[in-house]
Image 1: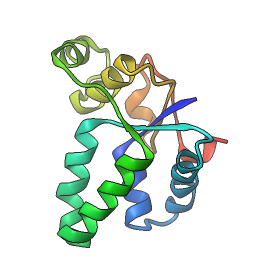
Image 2 (image 1 turned 30 degrees about the horizontal axis):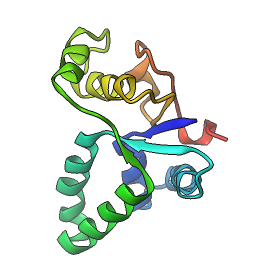
Image 3 (image 1 turned 120 degrees about the horizontal axis):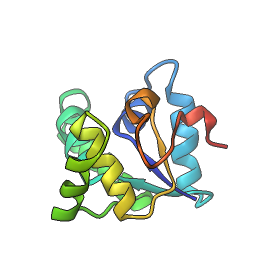
Image 4 (image 1 turned 90 degrees about the vertical axis):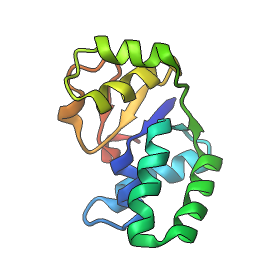
Length: 132
């Protein structure tokens, strides 16, 4: 199963955010063990870098990003991705882009803590604790 890990899931792991980090880490570990095929949106990488360097420092953030892109595949993004996102029923454009990346990369599921943001998504969303 192809599972896209939303930015908040990765941040939960990196920042050990209670009470979420253990479930998020379990999903990332499943990707590392190849029990699921982990995916991330290209915009997640830049967002993680921006936020991570403020808290974890530049060197640590780059190291974590390198490990992340070794574990997870990076979704496809093109002009068509943005056209699909613009036509999405999801009102938050960032989330619509995530949905469009999933569609373009044949991702099956979105792992996120923000289930409500993906109510109108064509790709189902689940909380990390629901991914077994």
